[in-house]
Length: 411
Image (cartoon, rainbow, N blue to C red; front, top):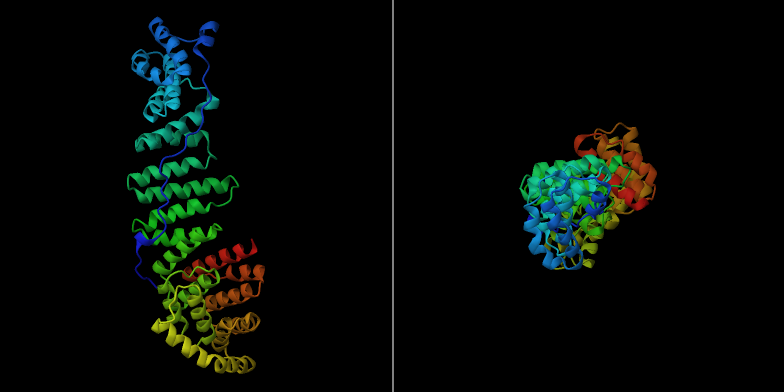
C-alpha cells in the first residue's frame, strides 16, 4: 500500500564528499636514468629540474613558485614523466590538489608509467579529478583503473559518485550495481554501505520503484541498525503490497524492531484489526507505548487496545476449539494467522500445514505464514526453505525480506 513520505526526513544523505588518495610509489630518479644513459632530456629541462627536485624535498612551499617554469619545458615523454612526478610530489607535500592533478596528468600523458604502477596512477588521477569536480575526467581515469584493478571495490564507488554529481541518477545506480557484482565475483561479502548508498540515491531523487528495490538489498546485506530502520521506512511508504502483504511486512518490522514512526504503528493497527487479532494488537500497542513512539492518549491506539483486551480471552478460546475441529483450508489458514499473534508458533505451524495440505487458494500467503511460524520457533533452516517456495511476484519480494531477517537471526 503506497503512502507518501518525506525524503528530507530520511537519514539517507550518505554522500561521498572528497575521496582519500591512494599512495603512489616514486618513479625512478632522473639522475639514475642519466647515469645509465637512458631517457630523453633537454639541457634546459635538466637545468631547471635538478635544483627544483632538491628544493622540493627540502622546502616544498617555496618550490611551488618554480613549477610553472618547469612545466613550460616539458616536451619529451621522459621529461613529462620525471617533471610530472616532481610536480605531483610538491602538490602532495603542500596539499595542493590542483598541482597534484597537474603532475599526475603529465605522468599519464608520458605513456611511460611503469606497468606495475599504472592501475594506482589512474586511480589516483580519478580521485583527484573527482575532488576537483572534473567528473568526466574522473570517469575516464577511473575506467582505466577499473581495467587494471578489476577487484578494487573503491573504483565503482567513486565512478558512481561522478554520475550523482551530474544528476545522472539512473546511471549512478547502474554503476553501483556493477560494483556490487564485482565485489560478489571477488568473493567479498555484500556491503551494507553500498546498498544503502543506492537507497539514498533513489529515495532522495524520486526514483521510488528503484528505492524499494534498493531497500530490499539493504535488508539482505545484514545492515547496521540505522540502515535497517531507514530501509523499512522506505518499504512501508513505497511498497505496492496489498493489505495482507503489508500486514506481513509490518509483522516483520515488529520482529526486527524497525517500527520507528507513529504512522507505521497506525498502519499495523488498521491492518491487524483488534476484533480478529486481539493478541497481536495488544502486544503492538504496548510495545509502541513502551518505545515512546505511541502516546497512550492516541485515540486509535487507546481504542484498539481496549477492544483487544476485551477480545483476548474469547478469541483464544475460539481458536483452541476451531483448531480441533474439521476445518477447510481457508479456515485453517485464518486460525493459523491469528495464532501467530498469541505467540503460539507451533499451533500456527500446524494450521498453516493443514491449509497447504488442503490446497488453500492463496498458497503463497500460507507459505509466508508458515515461514513466520517456523522463524518464531527458531526453526530457521525450515523457515528459509519455506520462504524460498514463495513464487508470486509480490509475495516473493516479501519472502526475500523474511529470509534476510532469518539470516540476521542466525548470524
